[in-house]
Length: 251
Image 1 (tube, rainbow, N blue to C red):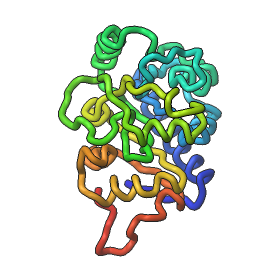
Image 2 (image 1 turned 180 degrees about the horizontal axis):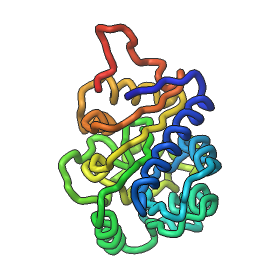
Image 3 (image 1 turned 180 degrees about the vertical axis):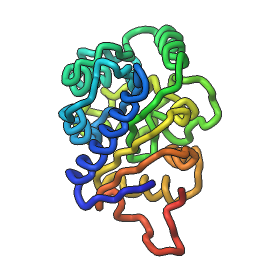
C-alpha cells in the first residue's frame, strides 16, 4: 500500500501512528517484538513522534538496526549506532538491542549479528529509500540473491555524496567506502515493513522503485515483492509519480 500525505509533517504523523499501532498489536500477542529500524535524516521526524507515543511497552522490544559504516565507532557524529542509541534507545528504555560496531573487524561483527538476527523472524521494520534508490546500504546494483542476513557492501559515489549533503560529513573523502548492511533477502523476511520517504530529493528514486522494473538497479523496488509493506510519501517525494490509470503504481 502507498500513502501520500500533503506534507513531511503529515507523513511523519501518519507513519508514526501506523507504527505505534503495529507495535501495540504485536505486544498484545507475544512476549518480545523484534524490530529493525532505519536511520538518517529522513527518519528523524517519524522517530521523534513514534518514541513519544504512549502505551508502548518498549522494554519488550528487541531492536536491530539496518547498517553501519565500516571504521566508524559510536563516538562519531555520523555513526548509526550513535543515532539509534540517542534517538530510540535513550528515549524509550529499550534494554535488548544490537548495535553494530564499525570499529571491530567486519567478519567478527557479521558472525555475531547474523547469529542473533537468525534466531527468530523479525516482526516489524522501518526503512527508507536513498537518493540512488538504495535500501539499507544496498546500493545499485544490489545483491538480490544472497541469503546472508548482513554483509559488507561497497558504497557508491551517489550514496556517499548524499551523506555529505545531509551534513553527516564535511567532505566526500571523510565518508567511508564500505559499510555493514542488512541484505535484501533478510529484510524481505520481516513480517511487516514501513517505508518512510519524504522530500523532493527522493522523488526520482521513488518513481524508479515504484513505477519502474523490479531490478537490482533500483534496490528499493524489491519491496514490491513483500506482501505487507506500506510506503509513506509526502507530496514532494511523490511528485514524479504518474497518477493516471494507465500508469499505476506497480505493487
